[in-house]
Image 1 (cartoon, rainbow, N blue to C red):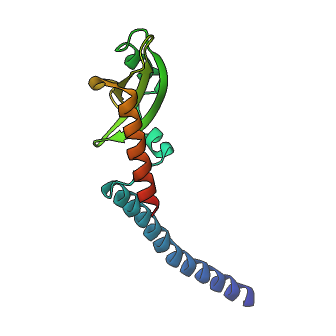
Image 2: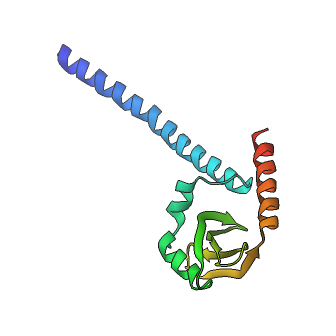
Length: 141
């Protein structure tokens, strides 16, 4: 009889632990979801892995689409980013006999080119780099 009582007590304790643990797990899951939503609403940048998980179009496919808009161009850089609420692949192309960079954005969900092909001069690139650096410094403070 003592063994049966101990078994019932152990079972009861295990049941109580589960009743305490399950709400904690649920609360943790809700908290993580809220933090993730807060980050989106506060304009905080998502990590590359979070963005990659959302992208439906591969970098290679997006690059082919972008290159069709800049014949003879060579990819200088390509990145996945959230811009104006849209997930895009952004590519910068160098052009032979030019110091300018052609920028083409491809929707990472649909694969369509977003907006016009933009031309960035060395001066505008330097200005953009300075702005990004200042923003990064401000975000760290």
